[in-house]
Image (cartoon, rainbow over all chains, first blue to last red):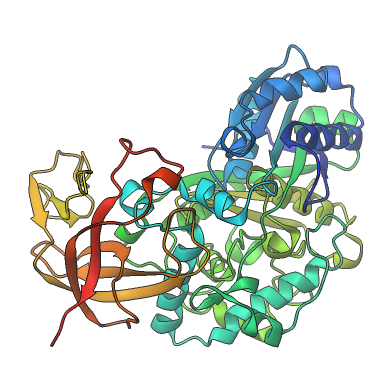
Length: 388
Length: 126
């Protein structure tokens, strides 16, 4: 079904520093958009579609209409624009929307920018904004995304007889990777003892099992490959991209350790790219919580169910391992400005494929990003490859 | 307590499946054919957590569990707060009386959109 479709190229990629930023969401969007346009080196008047990935600018800072704001602030009038909300997977959904526009021929140059401004709210307030994605039978009990992670981590460790330390290895690895990422919220290494003695947030998970609340933005510029060849000598291509949705009510899934939408979106993306899990050289996974790195790496077929924890402990997923996962530092270290994260994952794939990742550079020509909304509720998977 | 509570009833569907909460349409694509009342029966704790970073108006710490009830067409699972000092996988619990689960005045989602009165799990004495 994809045989005659022209490939979509990424000709520009950039991101702001993630962390506690003084700017508001519109300013963060503009910073990333301008950096992306500059990275592509194209005339902004070529941009005919703009997609802004954002979960909750209305709830966080009372600002709706931010796609329109970006178009005006960056003088992209009269491009079509839309805001894409798919909770924590807004970024991946934004990339998917941009890809759809270009692949269908509706657009010849699509700008995708994701952003979130969160740190001006207290942790409790930000947690409630995110928890508002839950079903009423969950929300009324004060169920949060971190509490889903605690419930699932306990089930996983119990079901597969995995040691608690295996989760800490994910945190240590991703913090180590983040040291070499100048855009990361945290650029500090942590050791196992620090992770395992940090305060409990959702038992058995502790503070260092969780990503921080962050501000930031990231952008991509997409074009048909036939045009990309004319304007860029460093473009990469989206060879596969797909999304899927699981139950809204998390406890209705038959096995809490299996993420059905991760598996479904992965299978569809592999099919489009005509790739298999063994073809992937490195991956950016949605490690909002350490347990999610296990669940996604198994759902995407990198490891058999119940064996993702062994890969983390054995160093398979380390930067110098057989399958580096989250060389950017992941959400865990890089930070998680909700709408920006899925776009930033793809920015890292582009940076790696261009060979521009510096000290965190890994090898290979096939990268995969998996962006998760809710607790596996809605997922996009994107496969990006070097052109050629 | 003036707010109407969330009923502890799941849905039963034409294909024989059950689930909580009840959905307008079941897995078979048809409307729900009946209810499954979960009060008064015991279930088994499948997993649990203690959440310490709770949203405004939610108790801290907040002991939560996913509980499986073995019913005809089941199992049927629920998530909810637990009224106990501690709990373990495999423990038996039942639903307690309706109670205010969080302060609706401090929740992001307004009352009327949903209820904040529901049932906590309580341990079953052997």
